[in-house]
Amino acid sequence: MIARAIESGRAEVLRGTVARGSLTPFASILDAPFVGSDFSVLPATSAFGLLARMVRLNAFEPTDLFRLFGIRARRADDLSELMTFSQARHTALARALRLSSVPPTWNLTVWFPFQSSSEILRPEWAFRYCPQCIRSGYHTLLHQLPWINRCPWHGATLINACPCCGSKPPVLADWRFDRNLTCNCGHALLSTNAALKQSVGPPSGAADFIAGYLEWAAIERERVTLVAPEHPTNIASALGDLIPLPRNWARRYGERDSRRHTRVWRAADHAPHPDRKAIKQFDTLRQDRPGFLVVPDQTRGSIAHVAADLALKLPSSSLTEREMNLFLAGIGMGTPKAFQPAQRRFSTTLSTLPPWVVAGQQFLNLACLHPMAYRPIVKLVDIIAPDDRSSFNFHAQATISELNLLIRACGHLLARGYAEGLRAILSRYIPDLYKMRRDAPHLTTPWILVTRDQTRLFSIRVVWIPMDCTQTAAADLLEEAEVANQRRERRHGKSRERLVHNGA
Ligand SMILES: [Zn+2]
Ligand SMILES: [Zn+2]
Image (cartoon, rainbow, N blue to C red):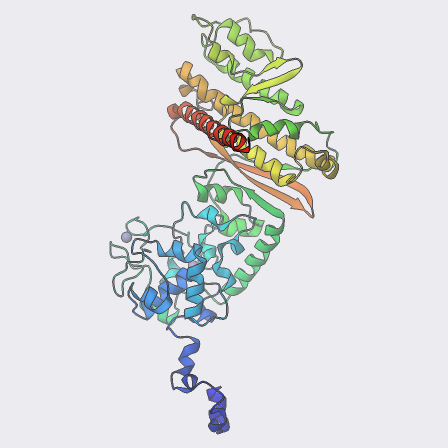
């Protein structure tokens, strides 16, 4: 406006119509009040990246965060985490920069190709960057995504540590003057010169790539939902394995050397008629401490095989003859001729581990499964049939192929959880299991992606992530989970009692 007024030589026209402040010689600075905040050279910069760059180029001190930007931070705070998850800080920064609104790309969820809260990345948050981009003070949330492993522009592996000493990247809100993003070992991630010249910053094509990525992610978010475990661990590595990128990107930016077990089930056009009772039977898994599950017909075979296959693999003299019979009963097999029974008394504990059949129904002892293995089944049912999980509406709405897909996946989750839990519990009684490589006790947690096409369920993808425990601790984890379930049951029982009491 000032420029226009000067050009036309009629500056006096503005008098009285424009606030005096904006007519000062500093007025144009108000549009971009700080050095280094030019968005045009920083496509989809993260809020933290922008701030870190401005801190260096304007020689800010930690106290300036609040003084100039209104950003409250304690010195021990990870500034990259704060600037990723705090909407209040986003607003403060946008206001200080005179932006009309918060840039949408500061919001982590717009980068997700699935529906989920951004909080999923928070518990194990670590600043992750491209060593070349960051030298110019460029960082984008694209670099934080666990399913992207290389910088699309430099091809550099994205890292979340100091490349020189391996310690955590220097992103706390307590930098020393002119030394932000500089590690204690002396290595500087950000170079003032490079930032001023934009010498190694993202190339001109970066904006196009990001636009393409965000467009793809938006389409995926419409149809893909994440089902994460209740208490997620190894989050970045789980999501890295679970989230599929389009093939051409996967090869270039997403490649990883993981050999985690992944499975995908797709809806089949000519699926056999599913067992309609199954969804209702899975309802048992909602209880605080579910005792026994009536196994859906479609899953009975696999549960019976889990017990029998493991029993047949055990070293000789592990089970008594009666126990062996119970383990094999589900597949209708008697004890093999070569079987050598254990020389001890029949164990009632061991006898409750295999499934058993009463009045034509198969019962599974859920103490054999870690809740992290069976609770996702409930979440899956809720996502696919949110309102009417036990009414007949769902059955009317869901096609045969969808229902079939859901029950197939749930049945597999159940059987796998049972196989792992069974080995863990048996290892207490049969220590030789620790030596059986593939069958040695270990527990995993499923991470699940549900994909729909239009409104129909299309596929279910699962990756199993090991729980953090040693072989010998697996049985302890199951016991702890059982105690936690008991506590839940008591707590809810008490609050129900109180309700009844108050009501009366
Ligand atoms: Zn880069
Ligand atoms: Zn270092």
